Length: 235
Image (cartoon, rainbow, N blue to C red; front, side):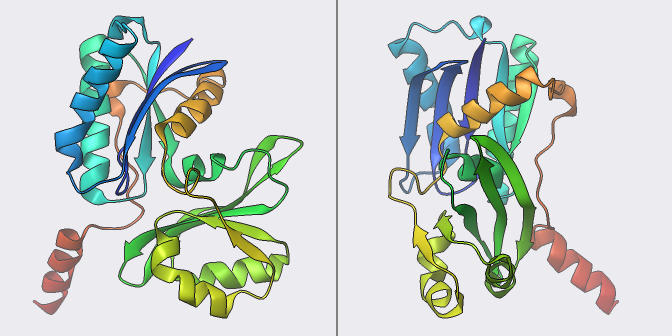
């Protein structure tokens, strides 16, 4: 099995090629360029470096959301376009699950936090039990006070990661009553390698979708949709 993996759900753009037992290539950039400028050139560079014929891949794993509305649309449209042109299925991997999978094997709780703006974060709570990945609390958009209260109530040590750490670090330090730490920089942000690793598991479990049917998971309305809804309420 060989999968192409894509993550453009946040500030990071990342592309990887994985098999069941190997990360063959990964190209990750966390810089100021837009994902529309980076994803396809990154994929092209990887394909050249490892002599990859895209017809060889079995499926395309993509970070399907939540995350940046623009980033998700770029990633999903890229995956969808490749899936349609290559006649390959899509594996939708929840973004927050993929972030948590970076910390494979830890005995602590894992809490990814992505800055969702409007005083909210995209988050969830995860754990590994005998190296099996479990969702303690599924991904959602909530205030930082809500997710910290949930972790404090569980009462276990936790590791935070994601771009929301930089935004909410001071609040975390004030709100947390259980032991906590922050993931090191090489594990702290989105990586297509993690999306690919989860994609392998999902592939084996038959969690595939036709490229025609693939849509990103936004969890909440975009700013334009919210503004339109507010205007309609006022009328």
